[in-house]
Length: 113
Image 1 (cartoon, one colour):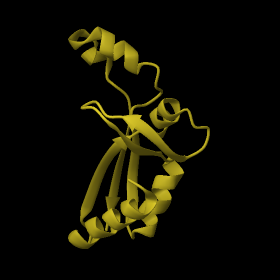
Image 2 (cartoon, one colour):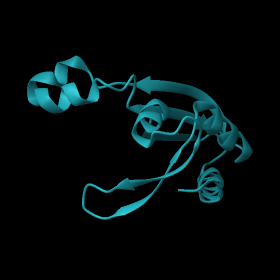
Image 3 (tube, rainbow, N blue to C red):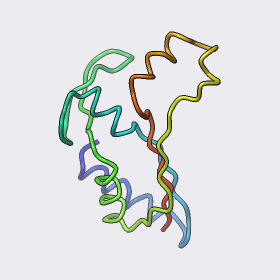
Image 4 (cartoon, rainbow, N blue to C red):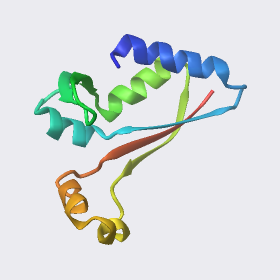
């Protein structure tokens, strides 16, 4: 989603939280976005959806996420960079190996109102 929509979404989530309430978000990691988009700086790019068709996606840095969460009035408590655990390789070695080209695949953000 674009920056305006993301900001509105985060503000709405903040409103829904009780004071001290926690929001947990997992999104595609910026490192994976940079590789997939081919962009050397943050911005919009087009992707092919797994179910068919194409649509917009957005490459943002970890700093961009920190900024927009703060702008929405959320206090980030923790950010984790996630990779596929090696214990999952036996389930699908080919797919596991394909994900190894990415330093990280997901970004987990824990924030509080």
